[in-house]
Structures are given as structure tokens and as C-alpha cells.
Length: 88
Image 1: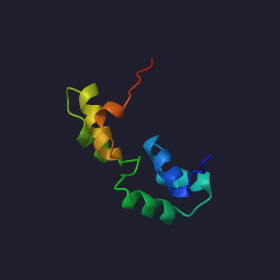
Image 2: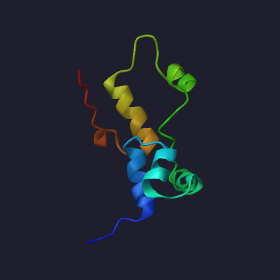
Image 3: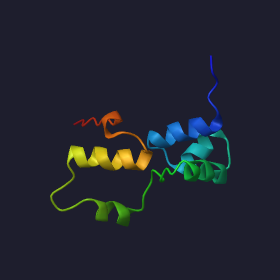
Image 4: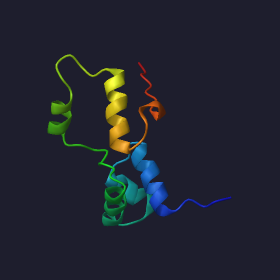
């Protein structure tokens, strides 16, 4: 069985939406290491500032297709690989 490297695990956790600081705590590594791994992979942080969130959503809301497109760009994957579940 192939062992997953710390860098691979960092990218996985970021893709699941975990913040950089939470990833560092979870894996017992320095924040800077997590930052460098995600920067090298062109992955943006999972925890944008509230102002960024507000400007990203228009008055009429966000469609599922647009959400998938944006998530795919953020994580560098094909939009078909994105699954969105709405609960409630």
C-alpha cells in the first residue's frame, strides 16, 4: 500500500474545505509549511474573509453550475469532479 505524503494530505484536506491553520494543527506541521504546499499547488485558502464572500455572490444568488465552476477553478479540478449536496 502506498503511503500518502504530508503534502498530498495537505492538498486533500484543503480540497475538503479545511483552513490552512486547521490543516497545520491536524497534521502537526507549521502553518508556513501548509501555506507553501498550497501556494505551490495554486490552491487558495478555504477560509476567505467575509468581504470576499459577500462580493462573490450576486443579489440573485449562486447557481449550482456557477458554484461548481468556481470550486473547480479554486481546486484545479474538472467541474464534473465537484459534487454539491444541499441539506435541510
